[in-house]
Image (cartoon, rainbow, N blue to C red):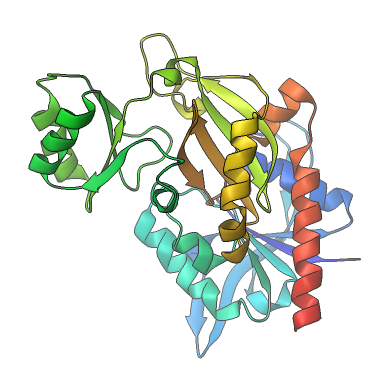
Length: 319
């Protein structure tokens, strides 16, 4: 089966081939005989009901400083592709949401994964609030008196912006910490919308586990351990990757959320777990595949592409 796969991503020339998950997804696609194409979300255009982008043939190879080859770019109707993978970094919430709205126009003719509507309606820090017993005590608010009341109840807090990513602006507010008001004022200047306030989970010192979940099933995990005297375990801010096994509790969590993930078209997500609690469900370009392979020899990209193919067969059968 020959398929045309479009990767909506940041410039492939700039990726780190020893860490990037999109890179190994692309290699696996090529291994299966599929043709890759790259386009930047900045080139998307919607006109007269048609969505186009400036796309170019793309070939990946595991060779430093020469890991990708791009052909000529041309304006291409997105319905010319069999599948589109949204894999750009999530660094501008408004721009990302706009992209999903454009892709909504083609989802009846081409399979887009993860589903753009499902992804847009599933913010990382909000989706888990539909399962309050699976998450640490959590409040979303932009009101200082609400946050003070939450602090009085739970004492030790984590405060972070709703649309933050990569460990950005994550603060621990200890009991009687005099910095709460200063952190609140800074958040008000930098971030719109409510802030996420959660009870601090001491187990974060042992690590924040990223679990790769495919069609609701846990495939493998990697433990991201923060540096000494830090609470941020994200690899992007200095956390170290260590081997992790999937626990019975984590399988129970996945079983609970699986129906909702499948209904929303969230085929490949990253589940973030601290202790017994889920802190985030990430459907936007999840990462961690290469760290898992290096630590455990598990090629998550194979399971992901098996799921993608199954979804595509169902999509074509329903057309």
